[in-house]
Every structure is written in C-alpha cells, then in structure tokens.
Image 1 (cartoon, rainbow, N blue to C red):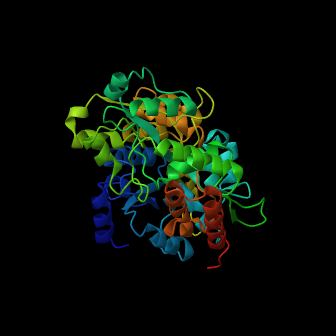
Image 2: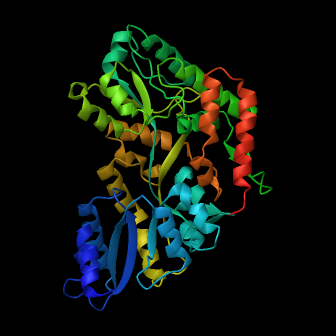
Image 3: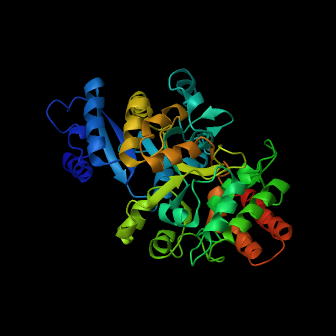
Length: 418
C-alpha cells in the first residue's frame, strides 16, 4: 500500500501510532487487523496498539474498521484469495465462523487454545461455533445475550417483590403484572432468538447434524414443542404482535411509551428506552431469563464475536500474538467493562459484576448457546421458517403440524448444495 493510502486508512480509525507511521516504525512488519465498527472504542484500540507494539518491537498494527453491511462477502473474498494488503486477523460473528472453516480457509488454533489460552473456560456459545471436529478456528472475544429488562415501579405497584427465580414463577409474576392497564410483558410473536433459548432449556434444538449423519430440522421434537408451548403462554400475557419480530416496531420504543412491565432484550437497550423516555431513568432493572430450576438462569442465545486468522496470512506469528493479547484476560475484561459486554471466559464474569445489567447478562451467558453450526444456517435465517411457524401457532394452528412443516424447510435448506 502506498504511504498516502495507509495514512488515510489509519487516520479514519484514529490509529496513526498503531499503523507504524510514527518515528521508529518503518522497519517493523505489519499485522493487518479487521475489526467491526462499534466493537471497540477508538481510545481502547489506541492504548492496546501502543502496548502491543511496545511489547512486540518487531511488529506494528494496522487496524482497519469495517462496516457490518456486506462484510460476509468481503471476508470471504479476503480468505479465499488473499492480497498483500489483506487481513491477518479478522473479527467475525460467532455464528459465521463455520462458513469460512468449510472451505479450509482458517488457521487451526487448537494447540494454542488448549495449551496457552485456557480454552476450556471459554463461554460455550462463543467457543463451540468456532470449532469443527474438535478443532478450534474461531477464538472467543466478547459476548452479549438477552436478559429481562423490567420496570421496578410497576413490579412494586403489582406487589411483585423480587424478580422470579424460575419459569413457573415468571409466568405467575407476569400474569400479576398484566393488570391495571399494564402489559405484563411485551414479547413479539416472531422473536425466534428468545424462542431458541426456551427450546434449549427444554433440551431440544433448532436443528441437529445427527452425529455427523446430515443436518435436519428438529422443531418437531417433544422438547422443542415444550419450548414453543412456554413461549406461547408467556407471549399471551402481553400485547406483542403475533406476525412481527421485536424490531417491527422496535420493542424499545414500545417499552418507552407504554405501560410495559418487562421485555426480553440485551441490557444496552435500556439506554435507548431512557433516551426516549427520560422519566424512566432509575426505574429499570435487570434479571437473567429464568430457567426451569430455581436460581439457575435459563438457556439463551449468545451472540458476539470471534477472532480468526486466515490461512493466507503473511504474518501468522504476529497474528497469533494479536489474538492472544486481545482475547487475554487483561484486554478482554477491560473491553467488557468499557462496552458492557460479557468477557469470553466464565471465570471473568466477576469483572463486570458491579453493573446490574451486565451482571445479569453474564449469569445467563454461562448457559448461552449459538445457532446450529452449519455453513448453511445463514440461508435458514434469510428465509426464516421459524418465524412463520411461530406466527401460525400463536394464531391457533396445531403446533405439531406446523413444527413438522418448518423442520422440513430447515432440513431442505441445510442439505442444499451451493
């Protein structure tokens, strides 16, 4: 890359020092890192870069911030072909790793994970999607998952003295809150990520690979149907639209303007609620999504990011050093505190325990899971039969019949070629 182009790329991310353009950086080997917009603040990246380059005197970092829109095709092109300016480390969504592993485009980091990085303590919902045949390709960076955001004042008015500790108590409390013109909960009919957690809590799944025998949809299993039954009972205690998801309309908007006692969302959405209705400042609380057993959080979908290294990286050793540093305890917990994320290891949850929403999220993250680890899963989400299934059931259709139909569609998509 010409000096002028490199300067422009670095300046856009505010990382001149990290790009080796300051005195003393010209003889260093460059490690190019692609991180996603919004994942880490500029000041965090600047401090990380300065310390990393100080400890690794032969390396300089070129951190380039990427937009989420269209990133899949851009990453695929980078790992397929590779260029002199291509990335050595890439941040990808935890559920996206499998599509790059399928084509043998990522560096196998199993040895590092087991011997040096304490991989046995990683959150399963981040670590497992980064694996194939027990080999680790995606290294967990940070996580986020849903909790229950609730109105403390409405709980007090309804006589609900404490957050429920299991699902039966959650239903009872929600019914108690569903009075006096209030909605006990706002739960859109097509919030399939929340449904997935209920299904996992029952021991079911969205799809299964049959122990390597081929993927098939599993919404029609008894466990998955029990998860849908719980969703149906909970959703009926509010006025969420049965034919739309949580973004249509945005549930934070509904929560902010209405007498809604609860919603299931990531804790950060509480800030949006308060921005839209400042009168709710100090009135919002958080608790983990309840599970079947008292005191044990329910299973939840966990989203977040893994770091991967393309096989075509020209600076593999430097790339490994960057991944080790970014995902290590020091920088990982600092990022979690800064951004209200969940750290990548269960043992690090205490680092965010002083913030109520993040503490609730971290408690749930220990039981977090990800979507089926199939390269074709993105196609399922693109034409999502789970949403249609949910709406039909909430409108009164037979759950078993509709679950079979949706499972067939999932199977057809996961077994399609190309």
